Image (tube, rainbow, N blue to C red; front, side):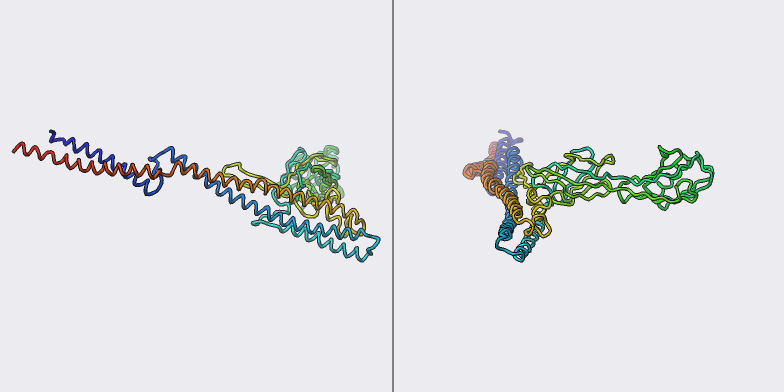
Length: 476
């Protein structure tokens, strides 16, 4: 029997420690209901459990996202339902005005007034329909303009866009130009007398006997120091004459010159003005072709100001000429992107074009669309009630087509997504429970076993510690 080293007590103590650790682990599992309470319980299982938890969170948020997307679409659909009602009322008024064998001018005038009010109301609906601060029907949903002709240096879409993506052609009637003034032919390489020159208010002093090239250098230094965007250079056509031109283009580019001795500027004073670009826009969207949309030019920039291209801005290179540039820009209507899945890329996109009157019935109504049936329009009820009916019919079809597209998206994509996400959530939760949740029956058995082993080990330590007492008996 060993006395110095109580091997029995050490063995019993080791077994007690093992049983205690098992007991504590089982106690944590049974009290929490979880099989994994620390990473040490199951490192791989913990990783999988966390991944599944993130997936569950993503699924739950995706359901909320899809339901919010449905609410947005229902808001847009409700507005378009009212627009369709207005268009149906307009059609009845146009039919009444077309009944010329019965109605008189006063009746047609009353019908026209109601049509004007209905179109105004339709525009109001398109301009004010919003969801959570987002405009839905006025075309502000991130329309895109992509440059497809190198003559365009910059482009941005406006508040309007065609119902479907379209190539835009530009018919330039007037090319942009810079302001330019050409001085007189001095006739000699040096100036015979001192001269004082003013260019857009900047004073430059030319000394007696100063050379032509030196004078040009002084002028450019002075203009640059004053921040005036004008450059002087020697004329290529007339010896010793100086050409002044603005670096900017358009009507805002101006040159005003005065010359004290008339040695540089003929007559002592000259002015020059730039020219703004001018032109019209055409586009084809599906089967719809619209030509001659007006645009406003400022310098080298042309901005659409009518119909589906309202606000489309294009800045041209300075090499543009009065010509037609086909397929200059590709315009796509703004898209709404809905995150309807738990992972990156699980998105659904749609677009709602500008539903204002100038964007409806563009094939029949021309550049002004539905507004062509208003007072002063080409197809107003007095001038052409029969054609007004055709314009209204196309507008009804435009609104109905867009409404149907949104309805299909809701029914066959978003509603189906919500249902599918519910099933996915159930299955993912079950998978996570399989990994994370404790088997109570099995763990209770383990807990009881460890509890008995702890009690037995404790008892054996006591027995091992009493063994040395037997040695005392032998010694005595």
